[in-house]
Length: 482
Image (cartoon, rainbow, N blue to C red):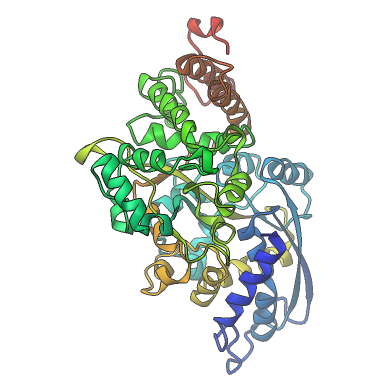
């Protein structure tokens, strides 16, 4: 479905749900405000083709009405955008000159360190302390750890969540409910096809593999599942990490900066082998799959299931398939009581340009206060967004707003989703990692261990040169290559 159609449809559905909503209390008198009578132009930088980024801007006219009525000033918002792979560079190029070109930025969570360390974005600790409207009770500590804190483990806050996101499993419930499919699966595996959210909540990857195998029918142009293996940006990384983390693997020690000996473990090598093994249940070309490619094969009916970001639910669930799709937690890894699910968290925070003048800074803060009002967060959800505050997600009706809402919320529970490095050298570490991971997945590097050694040695050197890692790469690294 074209992106414009998606945005239009989301807006219509959202507006229909807020008739009479108290975004502007017209009975309330104007409050004294230093910008009263002024006109301010603001610009937001966001992610191209990413619905949640656009939603913030699409909702900005509501904010403009709100401040005009309540505070007596006028504001308009422009929107600049770039793809995930280019957005950081676009932001950095502008901020490095102390420009006010972008007053508010929708940052990927891993960029916090790279934006904060040079002093480009506003540190929020004092701002939050002085503004009770920003003292939000978040749904879980995953929110603060992913979207607000740098350095990891500190109490320094730099972002406020714009869009929460987790990996969910989109499945064809019409196939699961088909009596003929149920009988055939029972006959082949002596087991029942999962039917409910609770069934998938208890499902392991070993059990789900039977389901994926069962629905893999190349002669009928149908495959069991789809994941992301693309070298673009962080696609392969985000979908490989759950195999590692859920089985006890780690990728670094954020306290010491140590990577070598942690990332390149036997546990992680085995996890890489498992992830590569799942390609046999996926369509040809899956090695190049990212977000858009998964949307295409799922909406075209070529796959039974899809491990996909909850944030693209509006694109995954179309008018044509909306009655055929169920969104559930992705499977656990391991066996029995020891089985775990720890998947990669997605999503983006708002960050505020530290070089904003006094007027633009005041508008930015007014916008943030408005963004977290209960009416605004609920409207954001109705348009297809994923709020992060406990009040909205705990609303008894939240699970009914979007088909992916329950799975998203479930995966936000403590310990089920995790972010990775927020270090300023994020882009260098990621590029090296994507090179190594995809080299193994495509068969250019035969051994998972070899690929992991290459990445670990390179990242150890990057962090040691930066002064984050206490130790240099070992002598073994001098002979490591892909």
